[in-house]
Image (cartoon, rainbow, N blue to C red; front, side, top):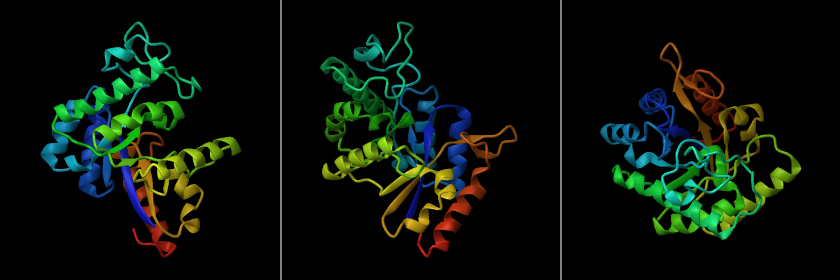
Length: 249
């Protein structure tokens, strides 16, 4: 099983940007994905170009936090508030109107163009809190991804503990991605889920994406924002577990 470690939230803060840069230098991560409407996005793009990892930056689509880029979505409830901030919560709506889908499509288009404006041309796509895996949201943005030549989309995470209904939906969504010829990893999940579930014992081939959220501790150590654990030994342990099952990484 080949492991790819992806760092989400590039551009979220100066601490996150610094942590991701160090994680690349330390060999902890293989790639990252950036948030176009994040406050430190421009700094993230400049850092990626200066450090030579601009080709390893993907889009981390975001309609859950911060301000919209597109005016089309700015006044549409429940996505945006009158105060100008995103207010959407995951799975808040099971169905979307054509107007809502067009607004999401416009926002996705504008977020991708912001990458281009800063000299980055990503072909890999994921999203903040996996919002792109909601059915109508993905149907709204899929034509945009085709338009800009994207090749890869993150699957709905399938490494973790899920209800029967959630697991069934994930299977359907991921099958749709496969049928639509998107280049996807076979498995995806947070790094702690891979360890807790001893996931590698049931994997025989393909690629697994391990998702991390690097930031800096108060002591300047690269940690995972979700767990507070120092990231380097955790990823080393994960790669060791993968090797112990006789799989290359």
